Amino acid sequence: MTIPDQPASEPTTAAPVEQTPATSPSHLDAEGRARMVDVADKAVTDRAARASAVVAMTPATARAVAEGAVPKGDVAAIARIAGIQAAKRTPDLVPLCHHVALSSVEVTVTVDVDRGRVRCDTLARASDRTGVEMEALTAASVAALTVYDMVKSLEHGAVIEQVALLEKSGGSSGTWQARAEGS
Image (cartoon, rainbow, N blue to C red; front, side, top):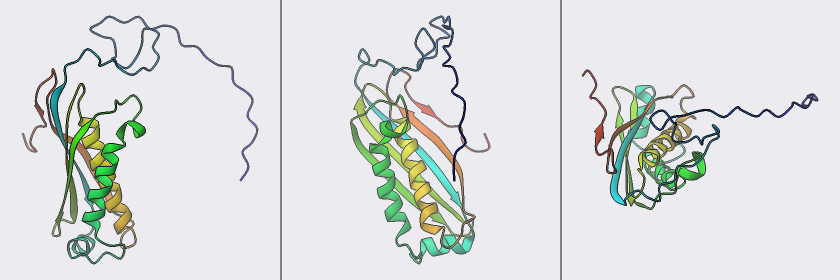
């Protein structure tokens, strides 16, 4: 495969964006360029976040996961390890995300055979100046990707249906919880 020659494009410079403190995006500087937020003046507090991801598949594939009969091995065990590793690598994967001194990461994998669902729940904890929502979400996302990778030899049509923050606590914004389904 060859890539056709492209004419060089002229570099563009964005005009400065005038912002007020109330409307300024936290990850843009006064000129509208991406920046990492300075958290040096924030207090170190205990922080936690819970997230989940759901992988939909046929009940037959879910049964193979539950029974440990997937050719690649123990899906839940590998997904747990993948989620923990991913949480620790979040700032390498998500631009502008701070390194956080994680104190723990938990990944729980549950299988609903009848509904054909594998759910990856995560809990990330730290005592730091910024939250751990991204670590919990990254752990859930990568755990779900791992589930897909492990079951694709049985079913390429498995789908990662949702990745969601369920709850967070700590910091100046306090506690937040997602609304329960149906509310």
